[in-house]
Image (tube, rainbow, N blue to C red):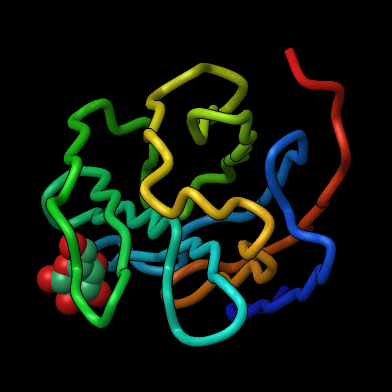
Length: 139
Ligand code: GAL
């Protein structure tokens, strides 16, 4: 298992793409993040950040060198060192996040230039067992 992953897909990973990450948290008090980044630069269209210490999922974007307003979700299906699956699917308007196949949140696109979102990054306290990036039909 690995605890850091990056993939680049120059055609863009949304809308119509689905990212499925399987893994487990590697620490009971830690956090991990799944970031969808823009090319060029260090902008983050979606920062998905489950924090085990507070049992909250924090989502945000880092655009124009600033974090925006956090969207905090208290539905928290993660348990320390238990396997999970996160799926992030994007359509024209939202990222839709499913955890263990249940819809947990949606996040309205703040980076409106969707074709610039080209990079997937996974960091921190997570043991990743697989990552799949697949094209899906738009719902
Ligand atoms: C900050 C944290 C960042 C990011 C951000 C999200 O406090 O340092 O890593 O999670 O919150 O709003």
